[in-house]
Image: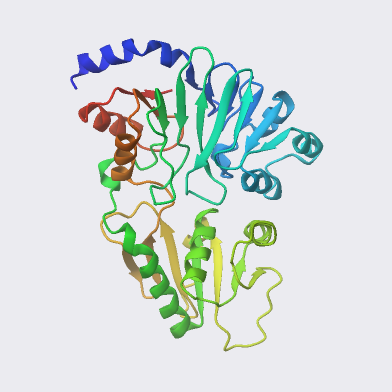
Length: 352
């Protein structure tokens, strides 16, 4: 598609564009009633998942909006992770409207449905059918493209994330990463008795599930927020995280015990290289190799909870939207993804 043809297609879909906005608050606004992942003066605020950049303006939304919509897990995580001001908790409890995947909710004629995004526990995509004009809008939020991901099919407009929207973020080895991670953890436990894993919230829960599914039963030592989230997911939603402890309450009375310590990604730079543990730093940014040994006691492993570049393109092909809007507000590679989609024949633009 040439630049002129691309501009013409955007002009032809101007009615669609008038019903979608991505505001500087981070909100994706669909029509007159719905704001997603940011604050806007709409009766509905939707949260796709419990990551801070998608909870922007939540307290303002609690004050203004009539409904706060998300999956039950996401609504609970937003509360347990302290994203809701204490003074607003009573209002939040009254206004929150949990939706299971495929369950629909109507507001002033507009219909909202949540679909599985397979990003972090409770994460969702959003499908909206506007009553006036009668158009279908989809928003992926953050997602991975797996067998559990539900593609929004044939929308008039698809708003898509672009975290790894550049060709340099293709990971052909991504299917082998979970087993590589398990093998490194087992090697570290056998050699050092303790393994330190550095990651962001969400990715920690993914690793916890990978290890338990692989039969690794050693205790997890968790930061306070991650502990609270794990406790919620186990006790209310039946997740299998095995034995886990708060980091400030764990007492190791047995020098021969083996355990796995989870720490925030930013603490990796201050790790202690004293031969008393193996350090594994998890990132989505390393793409040339599945893992890299950076010193005698540290590996960097490329495990991402986002779709990579090839998966983003594949998702759009499977979705087959009339118009693609690439989310340019959140950190990522919106322009390269837009260019690639135009070259594939899609009508695409970046907003804001």
